[in-house]
Length: 112
Length: 114
Image (cartoon, rainbow over all chains, first blue to last red; front, side):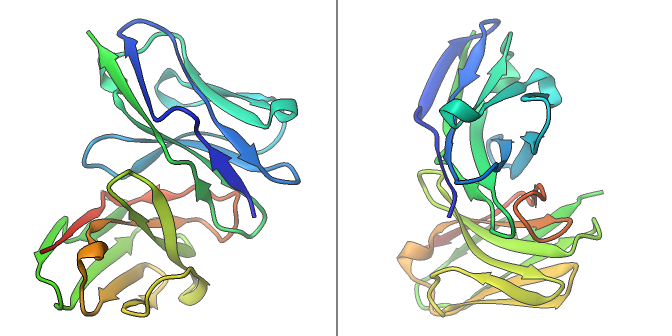
């Protein structure tokens, strides 16, 4: 079965600074990769997804992610973080007819 | 319009009680799920249904019983609640079964067992 690792439990960045959240997956074939965001007291919202094709995918709220097969990674980036981006971010991997597996999440704090 | 709605939002109850959480989606999706999120934010799938048929039943105590009366509804009944059941329970739906179908989540039900 597939699995996903988010190495960073908590990241703090200053407002306006760039952001990169790491995600590594394990799966034998090409996985389906997702990033979700969870604001306090809310459910998860899809930010972006990668299935195939261009390895750099754009999502909502100015986020992008890059699939790197050689590194089994799918890192999330944003050039300039806003205070409203403070939330929990989850990387997820889907495979075939299997259910989606989530990473443990990375909590983002934004300093003024 | 709320796409995936679950009720109640908060549920506080005592050990040994039986409780239910309801979920409805108006997206026309075929597949629905229950996830449990623990205090460390880890998300674990519990059940999934595809067109009212149980597809995934992870290692969950049989005190937990899902029911899907139609493909737009998936309810979760919990018998004999225990302290360890305290968590946030999320309902989700996807267009179809399979790892390439993004999930749409409800806002969660925070269950507290005292």
